[in-house]
Length: 286
Ligand code: PDD
Image (cartoon, rainbow, N blue to C red):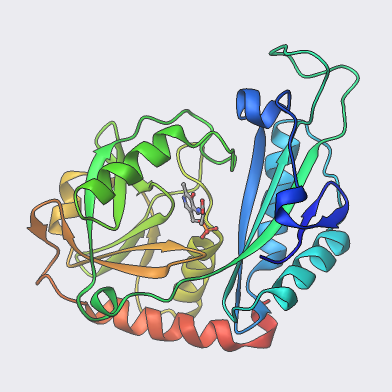
């Protein structure tokens, strides 16, 4: 595997070692980002770095790098990765004070910083032609889902439930509202309108989500509503799809045991997915 960026240095992955007193390890006290590149071109990097800066600010960790410094790091990772489609992983934790204490260390210590690259797997033939299945699960998360925290236990439990059920994603439901996926945002076409949950503390403001909302509004062909999707209305949807940086627009053609609409790829998804792929090819989309 190629070198990773670790605490300001480029090292082999097995040389990037974290102390057992690192607060990311002890408390999950850190945040992360996943930034995609397609055909070696970064996609949405500025928005991802802005969200990283916001996540860090929300938990009072000083951003260790400036935006141009981050860009230099991630561009090098993309260039060195053998794959054309690359997923960049960034994690910043609060660092390694000498003693375990819940409160933030005062004075602060240097954060622990990692950036690495891995290939983005192509979408499987089955999903491309038939769509994927999702299950619905209770949302067990906290009330600051807008922070991209490394505390992912409820998310990984939900995704594991999906995998165990032979599904591609879990839809998280809180107080009767279908909010988002374990690692993706949720869109549903209901009565000819495209719905997605509004930004706020109960979802992550997905970069793919935000770009798609903008794209649909700019096109002006389809009403785009940022409003809660009641759980039972999900089953009235003619189409459902879930968005993320590494899975683009994942079409969902089955939820639990029910087909979505006619149980096959829908016309809205096909058009938006086509347009989104075009957007990815535009240089100014970076
Ligand atoms: N996850 N909601 C959650 C809870 C997520 O974890 C993610 C992304 C998204 C989609 O955000 P974006 O479009 O910016 O990727 C929504 C990443 C991919 C992950 O955890 O690996």
